[in-house]
Length: 345
Image (cartoon, rainbow, N blue to C red):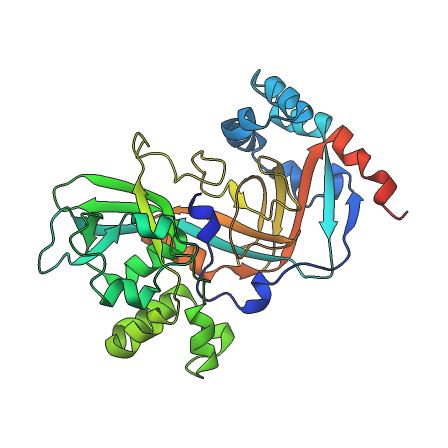
């Protein structure tokens, strides 16, 4: 399992993660119905598609991947062999963002670096539901087990690393460790952003990752209790042989690409499929991306999470994103038209 399973920005409201039960509609579109399709850099999208398409085993996908590996003209490739399919239900479209955090750390504990990044203990692996976050951090149960991958200097950033599920730890010796999702304690995720709204500290539209971080730091005692509100706890593993210039691993166990990778609900969108994104709101986006990731809060045919990259600025941009729009899946022609009996026309 990867970062993808746990990517749920802590301020998403409950409706964003609710189960999708409404009746679906499917509509095959023409490419000229995709807003600004002509203006995109389709070559970049094809490069990202090639990153994961060899892992697609169904015949129609593997045949298209073999063709794509011959590096055809990208725009013509997508237009000739795919059809845009709009899959909707009664839920409005919602785009959010995610990123790869970058923390400061050390291989040794000291006065500054005193917050451990843990591997999963055996007891958690064999238990459907292990200890809560509070119990893990306060009972001393983890001490003496040699499960520390590294020590970091900020418990708030460590909490958000667990939400994202993967990241980089820049060590004080100049090296960098890449870490990815390595397991969890089995408790259900609870949003601390929603909890702040419930308490009346903020209104829903005011909450973002930065707002939450700042509140916890300004209120260290109450802030720690707020973090304990989320009983879910994520463990990590070292990601070896992952080049520094590549993104974290997504649900397809391949590196994701900033502003070209999107996390989707695979119940509606096949992993590896091209997805045309029309994100409205501030800073509109019209771009062909590839569905290479998933997320626990990504539920429904019009729900997507855009990967923004690594580090602080990427995190700020991702944390601000919560916009409407439209998402259109590009499917192999035969798959698209196989839906025709289901379409009410």
